Amino acid sequence: MQSNVDLSKFNLASKIFTGLIFNPGSLPMLVESGLVNVYLDDYGHRCRYQNCILFLFNTRTRFYPTLEEKVAGFQSFYDWYDVGVDNHRMLVFKVGKVYQDDFYKLKHMIPTNYSDEFKKVTNLHTDLIMRIDHSKEIYRYNL
Image (cartoon, rainbow, N blue to C red; front, side, top):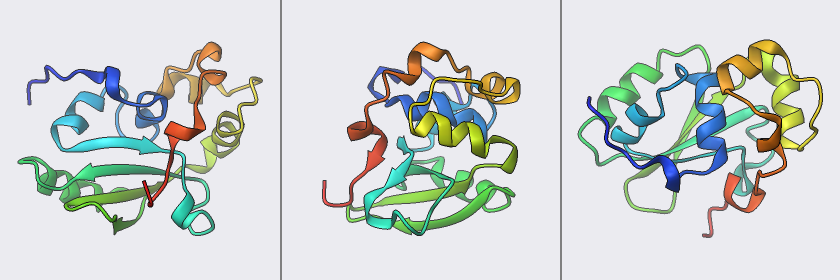
């Protein structure tokens, strides 16, 4: 898939956390497959999905069925659910144990001591931490 996708409309979670689940640099391919955005939490399912990253997809794209088939085999794949928007599905992935401490720190905007592995797969820059806008990084079913 060739990608001429404008990534500026995506939230920071999409740009930072995609590398934890997929290959670093895979965001354009995911957009082609119907990615809407990535979320750190979901107010509708807060207790159910701890230490998870949630990927919201529009299932009506040409490449989505192939993507869903592939991610079902991922060790990190945890669950999925349809949201209240037609043809939108949330794919839920567990953050690997090696990254859970880093994920917690970033989710809670603690700007200190991230592991080298985490920095490598997320392309994390400390200045991004303070720019996380939870109103855009957490999914709200009613919106």
